[in-house]
Amino acid sequence: MVLYPLSFILNVPGDSPGYNCFMKKKAVFLTTLLFLSVGISLFCYIQKSVNAGSVRRLFIFESYDNSERSMEVRYLHEKNGEAAVREFIEELLLGPMSDRYIRLFPYGTRLLSCFIRDNVLYIDLSEEAALRTEGTSDTERACTLLKENVRQNFADLTDYKIFMMGNEVYASGTVFE
Image 1 (spheres, rainbow, N blue to C red):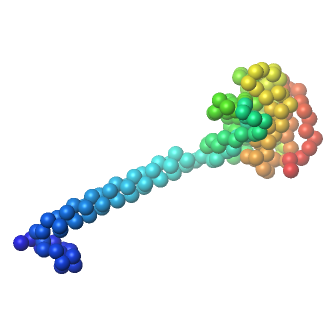
Image 2: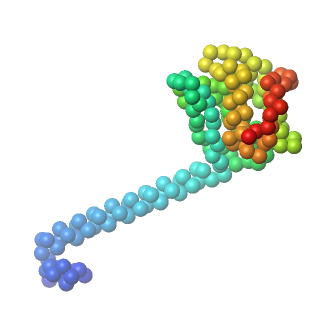
Image 3: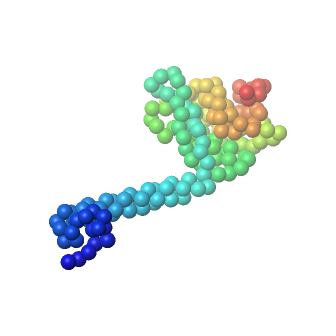
């Protein structure tokens, strides 16, 4: 007769069919638990490594469905100062990921220059930004949304100036609140 470690607790003889059934269920349960814990650990490890060196940014667009603003979350490379703002604006110019949101500026709009002086952001966009095409916000609304996006993601900036082809448009003269 074979003695199993738990046979004295369960008061079941070692070779009984009930005991073997119990052991099989226990083995299946422990195996499932093991695979589940390995899977969760692997998932957490991958999430951490994917987001390592990245920062969460919020993008605001107009919606086709209603007049409300819609938001997207993207993870960009973790950078500081002008490099972070430049990457953010270049990503914003690519437009929304969803086809239910409206682009701020037409396709082909490029960021010609972007720099910060005394916590004031200066942005110079290419001439395509001044064009109003179907599927884009009107220029004034696009500049307002650009300001909102920058304010949401870079709170340390106090003002902004947008230029198109080297000429200032919609002079703000206001301070972010």
